[in-house]
Length: 191
Length: 197
Image (cartoon, rainbow over all chains, first blue to last red; front, side):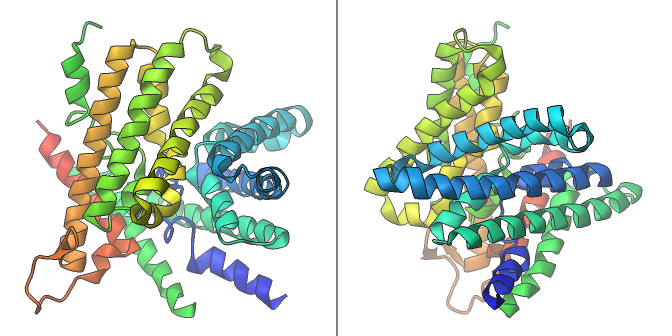
């Protein structure tokens, strides 16, 4: 049990997917201008990433490895993720319209979110067991959502501040993200 | 419409240079610019994928049904990324290890998919080729510039060769994650100042 808690902390803070491993920055800067969209995107990523992590691990273990197709991993994983996202979108629209209304518009964006494919590949690279892979997928996604929500809160304040013209928008956003990253850097000492 | 091939090529070098003008493909920009060698390697790999996928997509653009076009684009891109992965494993293994996960992640690099969707799906083969090459080289230049700044100040070296004397204390912040974000933010700011007319 202690191992899993360590794994969660390591994925959530120490190896934070956004600020330490630089994955998923495009949606990070793109949807963090408003709190509502940030929360929606964060939830959608958690939702999809847990499923994608599970399914890609199973694909690797039961399809790619037994047949020696490891070199097709990139191709197989992105297809699985794209298919999964499409399927989830259709399923939600039909069965749970309330959830679809919240997450719907973010789902197509997730296929090209490199955090999703990245975490799936990291799970395989670090040779996690099935349970570890599921737990780490969740923890990474939760870390992503946490950053996104924190960052959106800061950005809403920046909107009210007087920023020099050339620094506006993405530029100041990146500099702020740098400060965030510095804060998360402190967790490295824990490792 | 009647833009010349040369124009399609040169716009990638300045007017639409990613990631400064088109704020896309930030993750590899931040991650691989610790050293000049990595920056160039990543740029070349991305240029290859971009050119090939642009050409193929513009060849098949009339056959692909509109509804499944994104999925088709991703398959084409993933194929070329796999090619790059295998070639790099065979001929540039140390670089492959350094770039690590970011080679397979070219598949989801927004620049490649963005150019496929915004340009190759609407234009002819020659124009798409020029567009892919221009954007690819522009991206390589951008990565290299950022990598030079970060490597020279953060590590005191250029292409692994020391540039300052032995008394130089490297500014380690620059090669770490926070430095990457701040550096890119400042570069965007400089580009905004330069681009203003």
